[in-house]
Length: 82
Figure 1 (cartoon, rainbow, N blue to C red):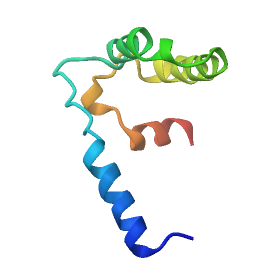
Figure 2: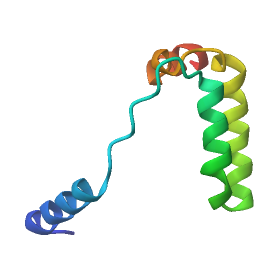
Figure 3: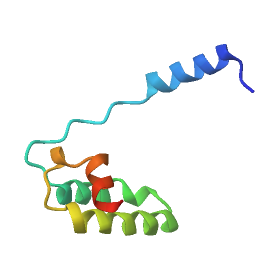
Figure 4: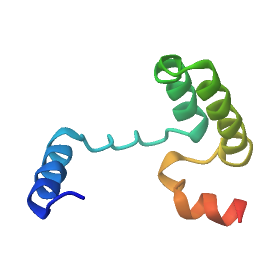
């Protein structure tokens, strides 16, 4: 179990190293954002991880692909899936 001091130092270190997500570009669709993610981020994952992510991305693309990124978020995803 970590002491409160050690845990506080860890939280501060993570907070200082994590960068906030960039603001989405106006007019960018979910499809365009997914394409950027697939081409730039997906190659760094293993084959098994890529397969899982591609399955999830297909579902997001099917239901939300044409939607502007600014209108997509966790509440919209929950509404459609649950």
